[in-house]
Length: 334
Image (tube, one colour):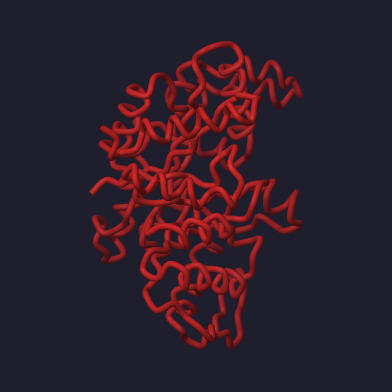
């Protein structure tokens, strides 16, 4: 079954309002809410609100393995699992250099190993074991949850390039994809499935999820500039640049990267090709947006969480636009 989900928090709404918003989404046929964590709120708080007010499945996409220690991650996961037994997925990942190093004073080193070892530790900790773990990137000596989850917590791995995609296939219950086109999905999924098969696991049992970027503004200069800035801000982050080089966009994005490297921010924004925007950002009428989401699902995504954005500056109008899009795109909407 293909699942349509919300990416939370939803822009324009307070966390306290997410209970009512999630109830509306559930009524409209959305099955899940998956949280993000960048520079707004943490990834667990929105899920607590949603889980308390609905029967939606909830998931983190993602909890960072560098910015929380392993035991703290287990504690946070156990808390949401207690609120939503059997309805919580723990998505973990390495994030990016700015988040880990510039904002949190850590070292973005050996990310695939760190994620793999964190998943291995969390499996044991969330099962209620007393864990003594000696890894290459961290060690834990004698941690045990006093209140482990009553139902298993699936662990999903956020992955971009082959190294992390293989980790997802080898140790994850799911793979979380991000910032890719529908046509890119088969390439990423193939790496996950091949790794799972080599590890003696059932490739078909690994859930493939993705955050899809949905811009709901009508076409125009303001909307185009906002979208271009969003693309430029992300794809100059080293992990995302490397990802799109692997996907084959080096020639298309080279002028943008060159301008950014020279400190020419306006030039970088202007240099983003239209095709890249059309591939990575879902835009247009509600029918066109729905059709684009379905292309991702047909390409191999099992669960698509829709992240809505608008450049609308008026708070009241922004809320109206976002809520209208949620209502129009709900899978149960006639």
